[in-house]
Length: 442
Image (cartoon, rainbow, N blue to C red; front, side):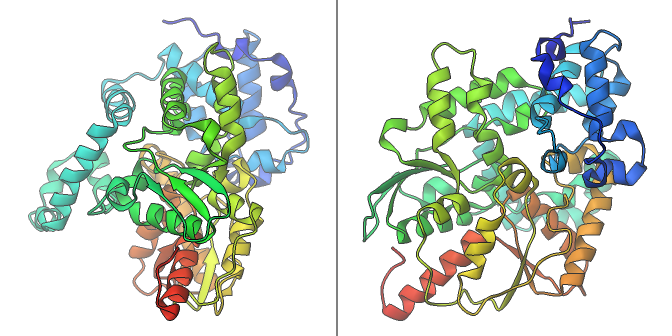
């Protein structure tokens, strides 16, 4: 067994910050589900501290507990002591992976295939996307369902098949030029991150993001074939791979020439802002990573910061509600900005969603690794959307987008039938405005 010392190597004050006050308990989806102390943030922190103190061995039970946690970071928002749960959570998962206490053959294979192979090779991820698009667009997927082919697959894979995202016909590199200039330049030059799943399934939202930036006077730089940001790896205990991807991402952009680096995915953005910590021991990249952190901005955060231009036309939608991506609101503290953008669109009535910042159950690959708990959270979210009673929900993370769409697809009579994103509605409003004036978006 490999030595387990990652939690011991943490600054001990980080482990001591938790006051065990219990403010996090009602905000933790897993504690609310089970009412068991070990399933709460403070319970998990106690386990981590016991490992660091040498009072507890890293076991399969500890691994199960760390992977039962969603990593939604709602506890960070509630914590009066400012505990950095994100750092503890990632370190604890790296600890259990290093200890190899949960290394079954099937789990090991899928982790290796996804984390070490597919998401480390952008060309391979896009090739798989191309194949999936052909499979879906030719109707072969529907034929396989009619033939009950998926009944031959293991139950876990059979359940995943309906959740396969619809792959876009064109990826971001086909839709966005490497450099695009606005018609009215306000002097901003920004880099645009295209993401992985966002690039394959929601490249249109990347195009919307570029259009919104152009409409606000920003020159947009979009490097070709960008790598994964590494959030998937960091959240699943593969910190060395996450560091390698962070270095690649930094090298993709000319930091000195850019005012900001824009992300439109809440989960990715939360991780992208921590490269400074991730690479603080790297003698070559530590300085660059600090510079990177200062320049990474969520699209909503950036638009409000530069006092975005309010559109004069509507977006073709009359009512909308908003589901908050956990890592956008709890991780990045970007809460009011998406609402300000939605409120700026003429003719659009915004209605708050009950428990808008309660996790939808997507949580990276949580809906794959913990399907039962994920479904409970999705059912709760869908019921809240029913109470909101509006036809459209906006969110700002590809994982949440897919999870909500899957949940609503299973409810044919549900009042909410469309999932979109705030930046898409703003782009639609700008296009309607320019169409009325007989011109292009920028």
